[in-house]
Image (cartoon, rainbow, N blue to C red):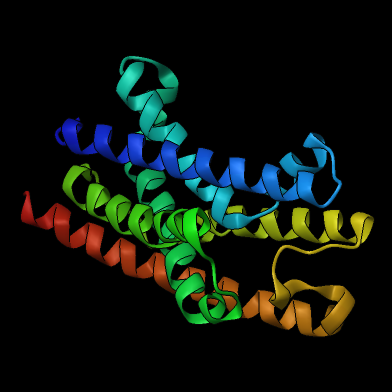
Length: 210
């Protein structure tokens, strides 16, 4: 790993952000009379949290078990570029779709900024600095779309059972399945387009090192 100090700093910051959000979610859940299990379920219902966790876990694995099979998988160009796409969607989606829907204060504001802006920007920089020379393929974004598609299925199934959805644009109880599916397909196309942009950048980066 060529940018090890940067990766250490990013992993540390990411874990602090994720753990802070977990604490705040559990605190809010307790205040609303919910159990710890309920709080954990709410915490893990957000694409933002799950993607930040993927960033933290992948960086931690590559830093602490460099010779392991999992570490090598986490350093593959297709994986890092796909994760960069996902975490970029977290930041862009929040900025353009969600930031005006609430007004976080105090520690929640800190967690909000770290999870939606700081970690996404820094991970994209890390990807650029540490990208491998193996070229990315134009078809890879189709594979990367499996992750948000699987998340969507998970969020909808969970929501149908509990009657609670993590995001307003997939809240079937309020906007119905037709609008939810339309929103979801639109976001998947955005994800695909962003993934193609990362492939283009990765290929430029590869050519620069030839």
